[in-house]
Amino acid sequence: DVEVMKDVTLGFGEALQHCREESQLSEDKMEEFFHFWRDDFKFEDRELGCAIKCMSAHYDLLTDSHRMHHENTDRFIKSFPNGEVLSQQMVQLIHECEQQHDAEEDHCWRILRVAECFKGACQRHGIAPTMEMLMAEFIMEAE
Ligand code: BOM
Image (cartoon, rainbow, N blue to C red; front, side, top):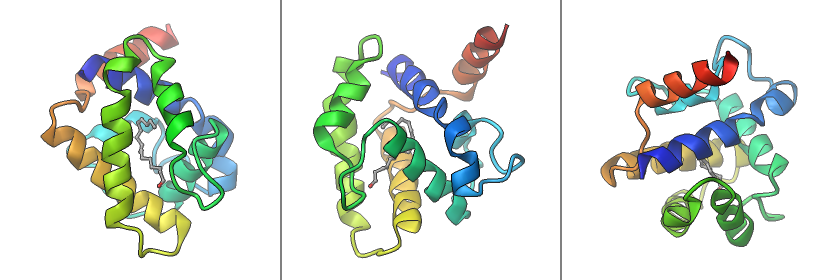
């Protein structure tokens, strides 16, 4: 359900403000987190992986080994409207992506690759939000 993913993305993205400094992600690289879903978005900057790591940690979604904490992630997704329709599927998709990239020892690089894999999986499953939806909501929130 693309509406749920839109809400979860915007909620997760709110942590970016807490993580810019720690992750060394420059302002121009990703002014708003929802650019993640753009078709032409490039997964090239290790700093973005560090930012996603920090954002995940902000919501207590990581284990000690910097992998997804399944229960907390499920609970986080369920905290959004209708989150329960997507939470198990999202946890499953992220977990499969983690397994594919488990050999990468650098946490920031691995999490960046997991995020890229997760985006592709969401697109294949038709649950990726459109940029139009994200932009519209973002502008409404700012007003
Ligand atoms: O192995 C580390 C797990 C972290 C990977 C998280 C991938 C998600 C990338 C960002 C997309 C966010 C939208 C919602 C996330 C909810 C968890």
